[in-house]
Length: 460
Ligand code: HAM
Image (tube, rainbow, N blue to C red):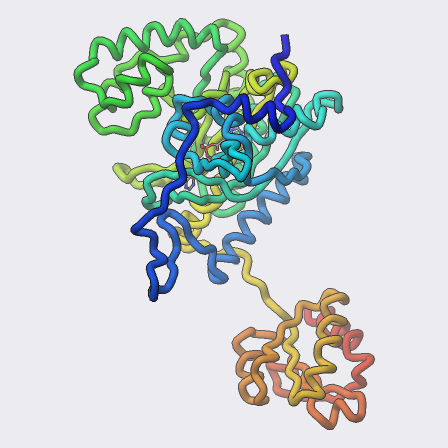
């Protein structure tokens, strides 16, 4: 039976807030904004600088292109959601919910969070907007920042960016395979050879049996595990397999494997996924202890890593995902099979830089150089005319001398510079300078856009 729907009147929401999630706002004395000092970035946050944009554009360009070709429609989701959404979906005993949520009471006292991920938001939206009544599967694509209060280190930020592909309504293993294939294509198109680590978590029943064995194994090693593992093995046993503590690794390695507990239907589902991957020659490795850090998964789970990552170097996943058939029901919707994948933009960008790959560098074709106030006034509308005509033009109106503007044009590596002096303004003309030959011609200002279009067409 479906549980209560998620959309509730405000008062109701307030009542439903789990008590243990309440926090008190406190002032950080060590905040970087001391009097007289320049305010600085918060720890774990970063600016995506103009120099980063070629990589940013490349990653998002490939993501958006794949979303279009594979039929994922764009959805924009809010950055702020109710704390309850993630406690119920990602799971109360996960690192994300237990330790990493940016959570605060809003003005009405309701606990809200900066979203740590967007699959739960997407499922909420699917339920809230009745998408279950549309032709299935409903496939959605999103991109944007996520927030996790993690210990900052290389490739680990407190605000990071994801793109996401979510497919609701199909139980078919082809959907799981599509996510992994799509991921493989995405990284390869960006110049990153990857390997997918894959595993299956089967059904909740399979996991119940598995957990009994897992608990028994960890009980035997009770004195060797960290405090988190001791606590989790009692409350949410699967989460011990997320533990990154050095001392817990041998216990994890020797733990029973979930694949041995799958029923026939789950095994068959997983085998079919692998067959599709084989057919597409997607490189993958079976990774029996991969459980991912979020509670909502069932059946296939996967993470992508650089294929040629140096041995011994700490690995950071470039993206991950899996099937989450129980999530919609858990959030009060109708039972809905679903599967998704989220590549991490920050880590992809740094992998591209480390490998010396280039992003998408914009190459303007025309530089517009007005000389004096009257020319500048004419320059704005001309710049707009060029932009609307599809000519990639650039300018540096802040510079006034011709020499400085020609230097800027040289630096921008444009083919043509348009020079608009006082004389040209008076007689309605403009000078086109060929930057390669240095040849100049004076043309009618009203015809310059058409003339440039012809010249640029010829140059292609
Ligand atoms: P996730 O594995 O938590 O999965 O995150 C996906 C990717 O986001 C990671 O593989 C990594 O590339 C990036 N990422 C995560 N945390 C950080 C961080 N602190 N700093 C930089 N990058 C990070 C999810 O979020 C699921 N919602 C994925 C999913 C979609 N499952 C089904 N559909």
